[in-house]
Each structure stands twice: as C-alpha cells, then as structure tokens.
Image 1: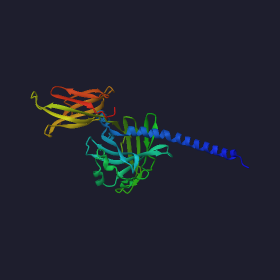
Image 2: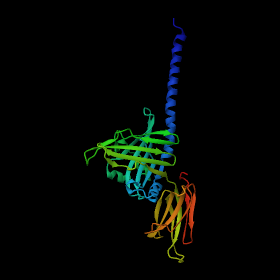
Image 3: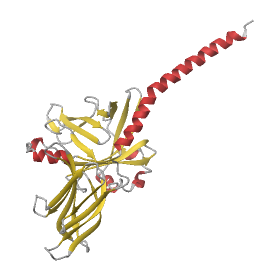
Length: 334
C-alpha cells in the first residue's frame, strides 16, 4: 500500500518549484514594469531644442553642422486596440506649428526577451490621413477607435529602451530598419539613438544607403537636444506712440519657455509690429536663465528684456511703454 506521504511529498515539491518560478518571473518583470511606468511619466509632454540652436548661432557654428530647430509633442491617447501605453506624436520645425515634418502613433510595451521597453512606431497611410488627424493632440477622441490595420509599421524599426542611472537610452538594432528607395532603388538604412531624462529628450536619427552614403542626420553626429516645455499664461501692453497713453493690449497669451515667440495682435485681431518671446537660454557665464523679451518687426535686437532663474513661476516687464506679466500654468511640470 502507498502511504499518504508518498503522494504528498511530490505535491509539496511541485508547489515549491511553482513558487520559485513565480518569484523568478516577478524578479525579472517587476523592475521593467517600474521602468515603464517612470518612462511614461517622463515621455509625456512637449520638448524643444531652441536653446541648442540659439547657442549654435551665438557660437557661429558652421551652417552645415547646425541642428534644425524642432518641437516635439508627445500626447498620451486612449487607443485600446493598439495598446495601453500609446501616444500621438507631432513634430514641427522653426517654431512654425504648420511646418509639421513627422506625425506618428507610438506604443510602448515590455519585451521580456530583450529585457527592454519596446517602442513600436505607426505611421499614417496617406497624406490625407495625416491631415485628418493633424490636431489629435488636442482632439484625442479622434483616435479612440483606430487599430493597427489603420497604420503602416515597418518591420525591424522598433526602438528598445533601457534605464541607465538617471536616464533611459533608446536604440535600434543594427541594420534592422530599412526600406527600398523609390527614387534611387537603393536600400536605405535608418538608425536611431535616443536619451530620455526627466526634463530632456535627445534624438539622433540618421539614414544612409547600401553604399554608406549619407541621406539625413546631423553631420556632426550630435543629438538634437530638446528640453521639456513649461507653459506660462499672461498679457502684454505696448504703447503705440511715445507718450500717447494709447496701448496695444493682448490678454490670455500662452507661451512655453523654450523659445516660443508670437506676434502681438490688437483688440480687433489685426497684427501689430511687435512680438513677445519666452525662452530658456544659457548666459555666457554658463548660468541658464529664463528670459522674456519684446521685439519689433525687422529688428533682431530686442526692444527690452528681463531674465530670472529657470525655476521661476512668474516673470514680467514694466518699462511704462511696455508692460507684461506671465504666470506658470498649474499643470505644467516644474
């Protein structure tokens, strides 16, 4: 006869093995889940490399080595048919919101075999589709019902992210991302090198053909270094004529602190010759400051400006002929 212990001991052993496997799984996935949650907090928002391009002009860097001025919007969206951690991405150049050069949907998820966070990139199929969803960062409900079949995804072009100290490093697998050029018939290879921290994202995407010829990317091999934008809301008044006591007044002005510049409009909505700009720049002493400046059309030199520490939540000007006040929006990350 078999004793009860004969059956009981293997059962205990099986439970022990299952518990160990479960513990092993938790140990390998929990850090990645924590990294993913942190990365999603850092990734959401708007970023701009105004300071980088401003410094390159100040330092008279050769034109062919300078970076384009780019602004990136990463807006969290609800797209359950694609994934939980999904973003609408819109990127434009030269401070011109209509000059959009890239429009994508990003989905992040954990890749256990790579021990990394994987980013899958989805592009719209036609220019008409891009135009239709151009403002999805503000009208997020437009994307709710879309699925993977509504987009293009190039196999091999995933980006993998791993946490290193106080930042994440993003990379593509070598020669995995490629396509055939319709113009030259050659194979084009794309590489991507990224760095994400709490307040910055660095982007270095490059392309070359099968013969190693340059297609695009910064020729100095330096990342586009974008800083997180904080938004301020305020007003400005500029005297129309000296001692006239008659002012152009504009309220509810929304500016981010990374080189955002807008034209002052009068009460009837007509354009005036004045601009206001908010920027984070580096003083020649090496100190970074928050600068509020007023410009007149046709003059690169500002009429006036003030500066303060970059952590400031209020900034304003009072020169009698020009007065203004701006306050950090409550939902901006500081």
